[in-house]
Each structure stands twice: as structure tokens, then as C-alpha cells.
Image (cartoon, rainbow, N blue to C red; front, side, top):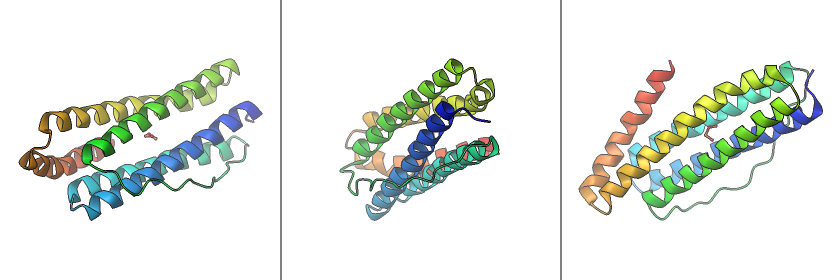
Length: 170
Ligand code: OFO
């Protein structure tokens, strides 16, 4: 049976993952309307991954005798100005999520819930990867600057990044 403190912390994380999925969906839709097809595909997939992160938490809470709460979501921004702005927003968001996950891990240790602590290790590893990927993307965009040819290639190649990472997961 989950302790109340752990259940509350996991339900907060369910909200964060669901909100992440919604934000990346809004980003994907914006990119698609800008003719950035590769970026849109990358973000649609990223949005799906966040939903999977949320689902794993929902099922874990319920399996452990808690009650997963499916939250209302805040409407994400519709406009992202530029690819640079969009991916900086995404990186900042992932850093926030990593901090939240670290905090949740701390709560597990405080409460001596080693089962949930063990379950959370998958999220810790996933966050390291997601943050690293977001930083790599920002490095590439900084190199490209406003070069149109570079942005064209970026949009083409980012689809491969998303496919490569999805292959790794299989
Ligand atoms: Fe759920 O990993 Fe990103 O936010």
C-alpha cells in the first residue's frame, strides 16, 4: 500500500507528464503549420512518449493500492516564434521535470519506500537522455543560426533523431 505522501507526489508527477505531452503536442502542431514537417514528427512522437510516461505512473499508483488522479490540463502556448525559442522552451521544461523527479526520489528515500524508489530509477535514466538530447539539439541550432539551408537540413535530420531513439527503445 502506498503512503499518502508518495501517492500525492506520484499524482503530481502524473500531472507533469500529462502537461508535458500536451505542451509537445502544441509545439508539434505549431511546427507543422510552419512547414517544419520533420520537427513536427519529432515533437508528435515526443508528446506520445510523455503520455506513456504518464500511463506508467497511473498504472503503478493503482497497482500499489493508491488512486491515480487524471488531471485537468493547462492550455499550452500556441505560438513559438522560432525553432530556437521552441527548443529552448523544451529544454527548460525538461530541466524542470528532472528537478521534480529528483525531488520525488528524495521523498521516496525520506519515506523509506524503496519499491517506488526502484520504480523511479527508469524515470531518472529517461530524464538524463531527454535532457541530453534537448541540449544537443540546442547546440545544433546555435551553430546553424539563421542559415536557411542549415535549418532545412536540421528539419530533415531531426526526424532521423526521433526514429533512431525510437529504435533504441525497442
Ligand atoms: Fe517524461 O520525460 Fe520529458 O518531460
